[in-house]
Length: 364
Image 1 (cartoon, rainbow, N blue to C red):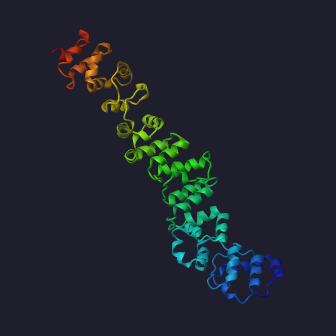
Image 2: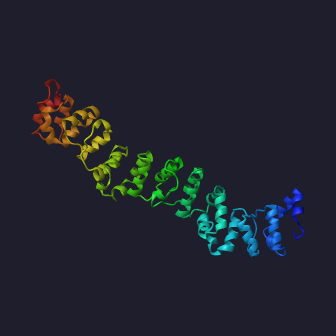
């Protein structure tokens, strides 16, 4: 090796290939050529543009190791990163297979970090995503990965989130440097909601809505986490706009009942034509639909099957407004059969019926 000159190296491509392969594939080669001057070794590394990928560094001259690190003369693979840590931070080696990027960031070696960031996508794919053991990256490391990749490598970001099961205490810290108009940031935030990767708080729930509004992901998150959300908030602290958005959302019967009894807690004062039938029924059941002539008329159009139930839940007001209500013979017959309306009130209902509309059972 000591006899090789730059002239020799540059004049024969075959010779260069053989020599490069020998120097990079032999694990102990650097230890074996330590009798060659440091300057000559570095001259050779530079001339051959060597990238060590399977080389032991433990017994190598300190100046040579620093040259290899500073000039990125190694591949970012498991073996060479191990060798760098064997030199720089041997006490951290056992953690590399579990959280490679976290440990590299903690080492905070300028040359190594710059090298990793220069070929970041490749590094993340090979050293964070591919190794099965690398599942313990810390939140700060994952945030940093997403910040660096969110603009152009959404697919890698999703792979990272699938692999590293971190949870954000504050959703605003996820992709915090990315513009809110960036579609990939929205995709990642949707992922966090869909996979419950944020701490379940109203602050996080409302932070998402403040940027992206009422989306299917936002509604589904509320439905899936309603118990924790409604049990940890004062209803008065939630804006009327948010209450209305949730009221109008399709969150299912059980969740709608929980919502109106714990958060909504007021009389409904809008058109019934806007509501699903199950919501009307629950409003009646929970006494959040006032009894009025207008709602009686609307109910007759939207959910006539609920008219008797509406009357039963509001008997006194029903009897009071009876003269002004339009009631079909079929509904009157059902009212007269109802066990929830007293016999004392039934004669008043009879006055509303035409003789030819009464059924035989009621007549008897």
